[in-house]
Structure formats: C-alpha cells, structure tokens
Image (tube, rainbow, N blue to C red; front, top):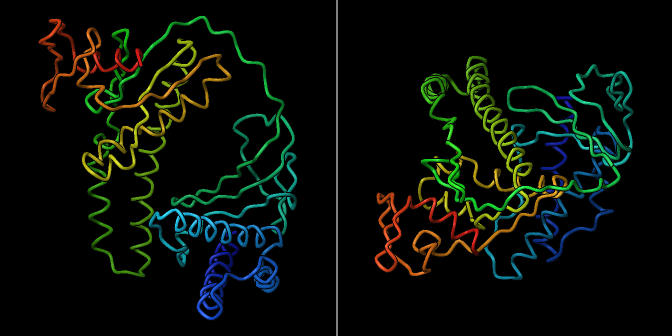
Length: 330
C-alpha cells in the first residue's frame, strides 16, 4: 500500500507537469480523457488513478472559479510522499467481510471499531503520519427521524480562558491540550532538528514528533465530541457566533485558537444537532462583547477587562456571560 502511495504521488506530479505544459502552449487545460491516459501505465488500480484525475481537475476548476471572482489562490502543487496520504476507491475494488479484501492487495486484517449499518459506497485507505493505516467507509443510510428534544435555549460564547461560556451561567473549561504536551513536543522537535536530513535516525525522530501530535489531536477530538454531544442533547436551541476562526488565527492568538478547536467544535455541534432534535443558529459576531445584554448599548472594553460594567443601565456581570446572552438574543 505504501508503494501505491508512491505511485499515486508520481502520477499526480506527472499529470500536473503535463497540465502546466498544455496550458503554457495552448492556454487551456487538458480534457479528463487525456489525463486518464496517464493512469494506464501508472501501476495503480484503475479506480484509484481515475479518482486522482478527478481530484486534480477539481483543484484546477476551483482555482479558475476563485480567479474569476477576483480571489487570490494558489495553483495545485507538486506533492512529496508526505503529502500523499490516501488511496480512494469511489465505486468498487473492495469487499468487507471478516476481513477487508482490496484490489490488488488481497485480504487485509482490520479492527472494526463499530458495526457498519447501510450500503457501503466507497472506501478510502488512509495512512497517518505515524504510519498507522485506516479504512474509511462512505455509507448510504436512510435518514432517521429526528428526536424530540425538550431542552432549553442557550447562547454560546467561545473563548480562550474558557472554551465556552453559556448564557445560563455554565462554563466549559479549556483543556489546553498542547500545553499539557508542550515539553515533550519541544524535546522531540529539538531532537528532530539535530538529525541529518535523509538519515534513518531522522525518520525515527520524525515519527516520534508525529506520535505526540497524534496524541494531542486525539485528545482534542475526544473532548470536543463528548462536549458537543452533551450540548445538543441538553438543549433544543443553540446560538453561536459565526466566527472566521482560520482568519482570526492568522492575525493573533493562532496557537491558542487552533488548540481550542473553535471551528471543529462549532462544526460538531451543527452536524449533530438535527439528529438530536436541536436547532443551531449562527449569528453575526460584530460587537457581541461591547453590546449590553440588558439595554443594548455599546461599551468598549480592553482585552484584559473581564467584566461588563454598563454605564447606561448599571448591569455588572462577567463579560463572556454578557456576550453569550447577547448571542442568544440575536
């Protein structure tokens, strides 16, 4: 499977180089059928190679679409083996029984972490940076009837001191996963930087760094999954800010925002809500910290000011609690 990842990387780079040559000479991209000719001699299973063609064309079309809108975006890049992580079977070439049978690898022993319900439509074999392989299945299921949720309404204000403050006064603490492992992470990264590039020792050191990052990522996802599930089961209506967390992380506090996982948390709440009988609404985040939840007047605050003291109506409460109540009102 690792050898086929290498072949996928070579196929992608060859197709991209060919695409750039055609565009430079003729001012257009090659047709799908022309690119699929490259798949025949790649050594890959036809489904896997054809999916790479579709992936490249999607990237090119997305680039041109953004360009037509005046949005600056990068051109698809040549890939190293570290950037080629998966083999995708979009229709056939696999069968799941007691073992997973995949063309052309034969039977693969797997650990099923849960029973798969529904018709399996696609398979992705994915290799993580730690060298672990995962089989990810896309399954067609009947849409279940939504549950009846008699919970209350709540507004959520996401933050860094606490992960979230709820409008009813509850607080979800920030676990700060990176901080718990930062000493070990710094040590392994320091060891990696001292190893000679291309050496076996560097590969071993790189694997140690990947294992620490994997542990941090798993801990973050586990915490966010449990917390988001609890919220959608306890409340029938949840209001959140529509935050551009990626752009915010690029401006300031990027390490803390990414560690908290604001975007991941909001996404989990949104996709879990319907099946739990909960409604989720995203509101405009503008001035939620300045606005008074009682009278609606705006009061400017410095970042270090942790209380909302309204000079108009006299309300004095925690600033995050005030913002959560404003979000719920909106």
